Every structure is written in structure tokens, then in C-alpha cells.
Image 1 (cartoon, rainbow, N blue to C red):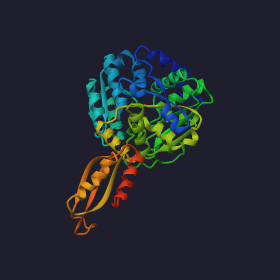
Image 2: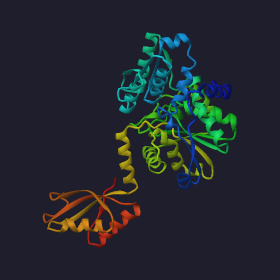
Image 3: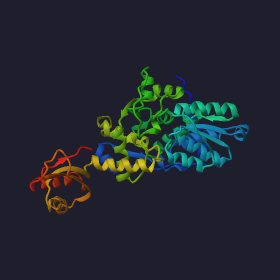
Image 4: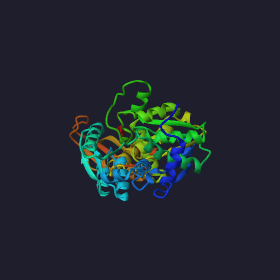
Length: 404
């Protein structure tokens, strides 16, 4: 089967991009390897200047515009990272750029896109509606449309990621790659299979947005709630990318919200690197399906780092709750002086840290001569939290842990 992109196209893209982009690191993770039973290598595409792999495809496309196309300008539609990459490199190259985004795009991506001098148009409730507006603007103003994924030059640019990975670590036998529209995994698959035909390519989609998996099965995808992985929340599979994925990708797995949140937390707390939910989807897959990766040399692409700070703060706190480093408990106490201090004394003696207390005298769950405490505390780890709870019971308190 003839595909729209070859490894020669990807090598040409690598030469084209060389004077503009530096290779990103591929780092071995001792901690994640120990947790998963695989040798885990992290490709830090979140260290690109605009914090995502999208620079590779966008720049490869822009560098191949004709003189007339450069003068008229370009238009792109994006949920954030593609638009940011087009805006940045178009500005560098002196090309006018219009970026169309849905109205509810994360503010950090809107702000950064504007900083790079692009004309920003916020239209549509969804990315699909924004796409239609972008096409209309491109047609009416004579702008060259820069597709986010379904374009051979975009795919070839993204494929340079795999050339760098396999050059740096030739022993990689599995690449786990997140899928939105499919541009990244298509380019990676073409390059990786050409260099190492036996390498396994595993795609990852969010359970809430399984567009590519559904398309390959000839089904209609059912989309659910909003996702932390908005970078892979595509509601339509690319035509070109679908052909490549069908031919070269070995398997597609699905991950849930909790898995992506956990991946973001692990990468931040232990690898000291910030990713979006989509950027952590590969790690979420390895953690969710350990039998598929046991004993293998696995490359993960941390595809983007443009996470909204407020969302990141929420993810961090939720991860602490999941790890039971923050625990909320409900404790009935006598409504008399000293009862509250008796509870906090146990926490202090065991080295816990009280975060907040809600003293409820009017709870109908308690008698008229008692009260209910809702106490949140910080512990070192799950074992420490359990020890504090045990000491509470030994002190005569009935403790009910409030589920997250």
C-alpha cells in the first residue's frame, strides 16, 4: 500500500528543520521503569519553545510555502498547541498568521498565541465549528490553510520525533504515542517502522474521545464529558492519518481521566517536568496495561506542556488525595471543652498536619450533646495516614474516612 509520507520525506524534513529546532532530550526514567517493569524513556517534547511537538509539523509546512503564499499569509485552526506553533514560527519567518480557536480554549494557550503576534479569532463552541470558520476565512481572504494533522508535510515534520528517538536509543522496541487527529503517531510510525520494522507502535486515546479507534472499526464514536486531555480530544479522524495508522500502528488502547491525571502528577512530582493531560496519556497507558509493556524498552512522547495553571493546581491536589497524602475524616465528638484539642493532639503527636477543620454542631447525624468534626490532614504517605487513623481509634474516636 502506498502511503502519503515516506521515511525520505521525514529525513528531508529533519534537514529542513535543523537550523530552526534543536533535538529534544530522550531521558531514561529510573523511577517509572521501577514502577512499570519496563525500561521507560521520555521524549521531552514539552521542552520545545512553544512546549509541544506541533512545532515540527507547523514549521515544516511553513518552510515550504511559495513566495506568494508567504506574502498573503496563513490560517490555522487549533485547540491551542498547533495554533501556538504556527503563530510563533510564522512570526519568526515574517508570515502573517490568523489563528482560529474555539471560544472555550484554555486561556493560557490563547494568551501565548496572542503574544506571538498572530491575529486571533475566537469562534465556535467546539473545535469542529472553529474548523469550519477557519476554512471560510482562508477561502475568503486567500490565506493558505495549515491543517493541524491531515497534511503530508505536517505528518513528515512530526515524524522527525521518531528519527531522534531511535538515533539516541536504538534499542527501543515499543513506542507509545497519543492520538488526537493522528499526525504525530502517523509520522512516528512511518519513521520508526522504516528504521526498525519489528518495533511496536501503540496508540493511545482518551476514553471520552476515541475517534480514531472508532473510525478504524467502522463505528461512530460516542463522545463523553470534557477531558483533561484536550490536546487529543479530536472528534474526527484524519483521512491520511487513518490510512497510515491502519497500515502501521499495532494497537490502540484507551485511557481514562484518572489515569491521565495520575500521569501528570507522577511526571511533575518525580520527573520534575510539566505536561498536559494529553502529554501524559502514553504514561497512563503503560500504567493501565502493564502486561503489554513488561520487560520492553518503551519510548513515551511527552507531547505538550501547556497546561492551565489552575487545572494543574487541581490535578496536584487531587493526586495527593488519591495517594492518601491528604485525607478527610469525619469524627463524632462530645460537645464539651477540650474535645477538639484531643483530636488535634493525636494528629500532632503522630506528625500529621491539619489543613482545615469544620466543626458541625447542627448535624442531624449527631446527638444534641455532640458535634461532628470534618478534619482534613496532610500525611507523609498512605501508611502514615493509616497510622494516624489507627491512633485515632485507639484514642476512642470513631473515624470515618470521607471518600475523594
